Image (tube, rainbow, N blue to C red; front, side, top):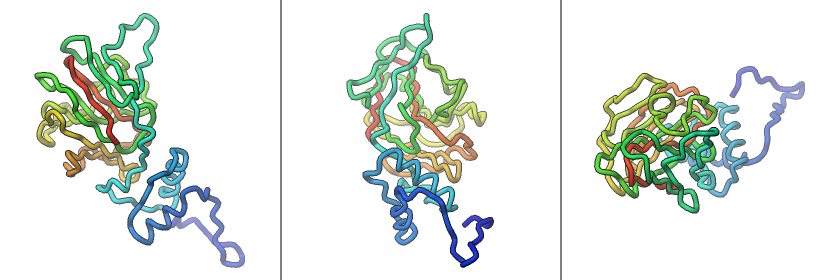
Length: 237
């Protein structure tokens, strides 16, 4: 607990915190298992804030340690300025899948999630010949984010689908060796632990280890970058 806390005259500690989701924290302290199933996004945020407030560390490599909600996992349409080129991507009706349908071979198609999220899984449903694509996180409030694509050069933390390497202008990574490339129908899970400031990846649920450390942004969005046409990435959890 915070060392600055002090009891009242009768020896009682008074803690002024929201009770929303607090029973999940007590359950975690007793069992070591943090269940977030069924919690609305607002309660998830309260649980995350309370874990930080009480200095309670979550498992760094465990999906239960990530504040997440499947209800937040949809792609958003790009917000283009007046006169900007038409986006080279489209979304499925439920906004779970993003497609690159035009634009040739260039880093000119991207998508990010509608809301900030700490964990997500993407399935590769269509992949071009060269497989050039990036999956990762971008800061939600980044002014450097380009709606037209090419963000692996300006902001965020990415896994290269085509080569398994790491890319991040935040860390100066332009292809740091990490894992093997992905293939059609593979799934990649991306995890951000806000307490430790680490981003890690999982392939088919198997951890590939910590990829990025000292990530200071606290609110990240899922992101994908596509280089060639006929690519499709689907958020599945």
